[in-house]
Image (cartoon, rainbow, N blue to C red):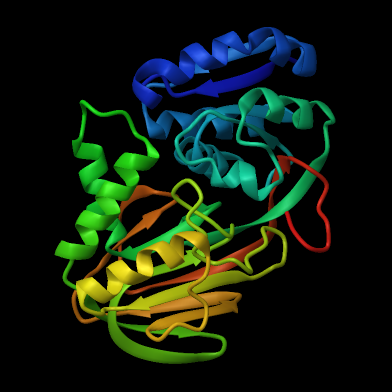
Length: 298
């Protein structure tokens, strides 16, 4: 049976497909004959992944970033089909979370070892996420990123969108409940994560591990925008633990409730989901190729 390769041709203004094709000889050396699935939409990524699981494919290569991985995972979650992620996106936090280098060629050397591990997923409604669920100012940030067509997605664009949202976002009062307690505050941003980072390396929940059977929660209170800006650099570096107005904790489930509906994002993708909702961990729900797990990290 051939190995399928999923590529989003619109990713990185078409450069992802070109870069993936350049890696074809090495991919064939690792996985054998390849069937290239150049998808036209996010829904098609999930459909191809689901069909691959139904047909019994042992491996499904995903060439792209966290968004493409998100939609593929929604097709193969809780099946025997393992994802092999070639990190060609702007944000490659899922790949990093399973011990892959961010350089695609170097990542292929790890994938060639063929080590398959089982990692957790988060679930909300009928969808799963691999990396992060976001509530608050990330929604306008992603909307801004999606509107910008003339500038490729990059760390610079991500940072600009984040700073713009910090200054302009109006915090919503949200009750956040988890296994350790409950609090109701104006929330600038909340993240429920499986990986320790998101958005290309922002270390929002440094203690997070992809296979510990827990979700990690970070809540940043709705402080004045100058105070939020002062926290931005420390959040990016993962040095915000213990700061006033910041909650970091772990729980197998988290519930969000608010008087007005607040939209949520999954793995950096806009959704039609809103509060109220509850998210839960699905332990070991995704098979993925990566570096062997160690006691102290991914």
